[in-house]
Image (cartoon, rainbow, N blue to C red):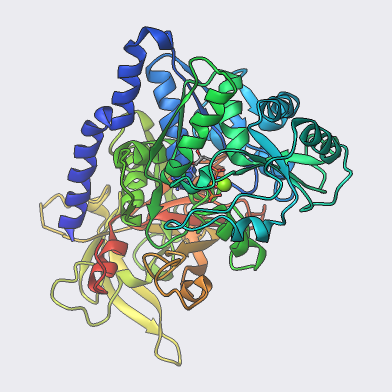
Length: 577
Ligand code: ATP
Ligand code: MG
């Protein structure tokens, strides 16, 4: 399986070096050479505050903020808060926190579409005055029915030719709350026969009877995405508006509105492929259902592909940025394998994470010839990849815990760990030889008795004899109990949304996405861990302390395994990685 890792590494390196030339970067670079643009780049990240951000948003965040940094422009943080029924202040603050955590700073450029409701309203009035918008009394079903299809033109609304005065009066009344939701809408007057569906008299404003998290009940009418987005871009002075491919058909409308409303040097919309990640879903709407139906513990459940979930899982901001840079920006949709994301965090943590020893499934070892009251301080290296991280002292005693899977009573030939009569190295400490095992009434091994060679302190034999296996350990009298949560993918199919169109996506939830180990034993230095520090538990993977920890008992999440064991099992199961 080394191949998989190497292949991913090669791909990642290739795309990292190729990424400076992705088509959006080229386009920006060309545009900035044009005098008309003033050589200035202004981008924006425009989330709708209707859920927590996910790794797909991270791709957009990195693209917009990194381009602004590279071309010495700026990136606006803007809430596209035009739909009060699904938006909340909680989502707003989580989004700001996540973008900041990823390492980006919008400075003073924090905006809300709702700040622009007054000028947007004035622009709608202007469109009416230009005879380019009208109030339509059709219901949403009727509008939909009369819209036509890709092969047939739509039908003009009977309200299309209302006079300017009548439209102004009705629109004013809509704003004043005179009508119930759905009774009337404001539509652009473009072309019901256009080959582009969004140009068939799209709705610009609708009536909504729900208080807005910022403007309360000030407004009874709310602009639609297509109307608000291009205009807030323009009002903020954005030069480049990057969005995902599903908006390609909306670009003519984006340009039409800016042209008719007489914006000079208007922003330019460019579409790129959204991020799709295997074995998960990247849609706030679906993620919200997972939360609401209790399939996960919350938006920040460590199995969720949300920024807050990945953070709680132990991902670092750098690993997410590297991932986004590595996958590049393309014009065609594709699906990135989960193994690729795991590769990025493993790469970063290998150099950054301090090492520690922890036993997940403990088995007691008694070193029978070791003095009973003795506690030795053994020096351990904090990070072999980074000398600056120094060393620490780990207490060694007569009784220790080792990993249950590191002992086999009847080992196969290539098992280099502990077995009757076999000698093994205890990491940083001594060579020990297994002399005996004790079992309970059920035949389970309860204790392993070993002898140690006092001449081998540090783990090397002075006579140069070869000992292949090295295992980790924790002193029983110094160990701290912990609960460990091991995670697997949330869905057991690559694309839960399309794998089986007849079934509910929850049918593909992986019932084994979390495994809890309650008996883990940690080396004492881990108790000093503060803040968001991911550790490498030697031989076991990367782990971070969870906020469910209490003073008595700590809880740890496994971020990722050391090697790509997940990819291995997936390949075995016949899935490509
Ligand atoms: P969702 O379906 O998850 O709600 P969305 O596109 O509706 O996604 P927004 O809050 O409107 O979410 O998105 C903010 C920005 O993030 C937009 O510019 C959008 O294009 C971008 N974005 C959202 N999902 C992805 C993705 N999977 N890959 C890349 N960019 C994305
Ligand atoms: Mg959306």
